[in-house]
Length: 170
Figure 1 (cartoon, rainbow, N blue to C red):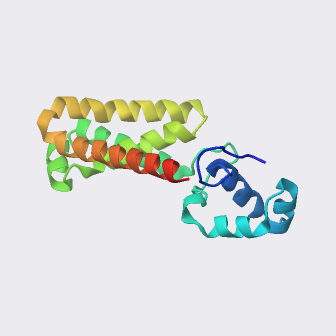
Figure 2: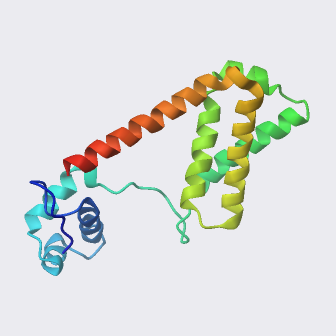
């Protein structure tokens, strides 16, 4: 049993709760089986399963654990857009102004997700190149791209603060 010895909160860690939820979600495995195996009352596991904080993040992944092609396709789209701009087919500056510059956030976040979740060398290299391109565009375009940069940093700050609050509550 995994427990924590802090204050009046739960004696079970969030990771332990998520582990038991995952185990009890496998076909052919029941909540009472998992509860008995770990010495936890089954009503606790049922309660944790209904608590959104402990629900697993569902990503479609391949056998190697890398996210399904949606992230890789997004990274590929950025490469195609930059290739079209390089060939003179589109003007990325006009595209940025029309799209409100927000699409750069999507590419950068998707590339960062691929970098974090994939173990394949090609996926990680493509992610690093994509993040580098986005950072280079921010540097080259200067204040034009401050809006998406500020929005991204604000999002990360809010997410980190919320994560800290959740850890303090449990």
